[in-house]
Image 1 (cartoon, one colour):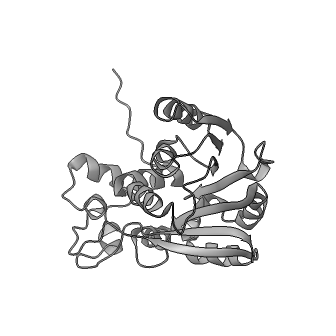
Image 2 (cartoon, one colour):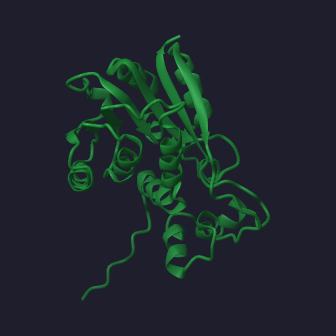
Length: 260
């Protein structure tokens, strides 16, 4: 059988999704939403939710199960058809009492759900919308019921792994962070609150291997290879010094509500 060469180049989306899975930022976010759903976020009574860019639904199913006990209608705008199929299967299995509808199109072209919703959610989607975010947010606010809430989550500013990769390898999407989103959201004149999601993965005296940094333990050879496939091995020690302390993926949740 002919040997096939390993893939050596990866898209930003592939790299970032792999990173997000490994650093387990999703659990931190679900825990945060669950803890504050009845308080400052005001989402626990929501019966309808529209998620922009939910991918395969793995995160959204966990959020719905733990944070939206009264949800009856879930809408998604996801351009990837394969992701949408996986999402539908997840909801059918884990949230069978929730009615689900997905639109496979860019959110910039989406005209809105069939009825107003209680929550619109952007979870780490702003990276992909950095040039159209203000337009999309203004449109999304029109999809909300009178007391509805828009929640947007993105990586924070500062010396963490995402910003280091953005600076070192000049990835425009990753350079779009909380300060950029804050400016855009303030320009809309809607009421704005923000919350820092507690970070679970801070550590000192890091091994230069990227996976060890993210996972907080010694990496297997296979795990190291996963990351070295897209980062030059010689560049990595310069990217992460042996005694530096960084946070892998601090997150900020922006809450946008009615006009100020």
